[in-house]
Image 1 (cartoon, rainbow, N blue to C red):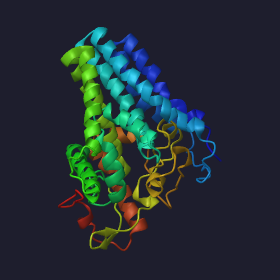
Image 2: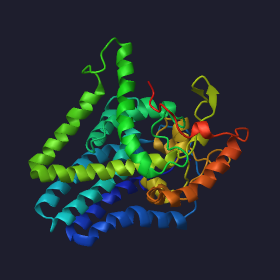
Image 3: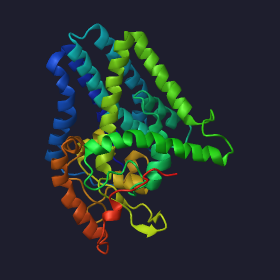
Image 4: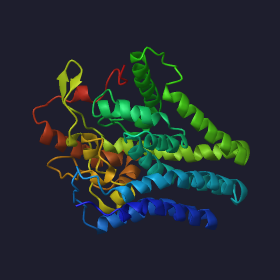
Length: 367
C-alpha cells in the first residue's frame, strides 16, 4: 500500500522553525538543531518502525509525493537569500548572523541536498536541473556528476571515494571526499566527452554550468551584503555540505562488495548499504534511510522504496539525525558500528577471512 503523501511534507516544517528562530534571535536559533535532531530522534524512539512497502511498479498516484520536491527549490531560494538579507540587516550580533546562516545550512543540507538527490535521479530533463539548482546554491554542483556516474557505479568498493572505509573516522573521511569527489566526478564527465571526441574542458562539460550557477548565487550574496554577505552565504553552504557528507559517511560505512578478481566486483545488492526503518526521520528525509533499496534500484521514486529487515540488509541502530551526530565522535561511532560491521561480514560473507584489502585502496579514484 502506498504511503500517504502528507507525512512527507513534514520536511517543509523546518522553514517556520528557522523563521521563528530568526525573529526571536539569540539562543532561539538552536531551535533548528533541537528540532532536527532531538525531536525527530525522540519521535522515532516512541513510534514503531515503518516497514510497509508499496507496490514498486505502481507509480500512477505519486503527484502529491513529487510535488513536495518541486515546491522546495523556490522555497529554499527565498529562505537562503531572505535569511541572508535578515542576517545582514537585522541580526543583533556577528554571532547571531552566523548562527542564522548555520541554521539555514541545516535546512539546505538536510532537506535541500536530500531533495536534490531525489531530483537528479529522474530521467526527464527538468527535474535534474532543479536538483542542480539546489546543489549549486550550496556550491556543490559536482555532486550530481559524482553521485550518478561514480558513486552508484563503484559504491562499496575502494574505487568509490564516498564509501567510508572500516575504522575511517569522519575527521579523515570529510577532507578526503571534499577533493576526491570533485576530481572523480570531473574524470567521469571527461570520459563521457572523450567518447564523443570532445575535450575534457568542452563547454558541454556540466562543470561549467555548475560553476556559472554557483557564481551567480555568490554574486547575489555580494549584492545583498558585500563581502560579509558572501562570507555568510559560505557558512550556509559549508553546513549543508557537512550535513551531506555526514550522511554519506554513515550510509555505507565499512561495507564492501565481494571482489571477483581483475578489478571486478559483484552486483550491488541491498546488503551493501545501511538501512533504517525509523518512521518520523524517514518522513522528514523522504525515505532516504531506505538507502539499501535506493542503491539496489536507483530509479525508484522515494515513496516506492522498499523496506528491508536484518536478514536482507544491515540495520542502523538509530535514524540519521542521531547517527550523523555520532559520526562526529569517532570513538563513539566505532564502538557503535564496528560490531555491526563484523556481524554483517559473518552474515553475508562468512567465507572471507582476510578483509585487509577491502579497507583502503592505493588509487580510490576511477580512471
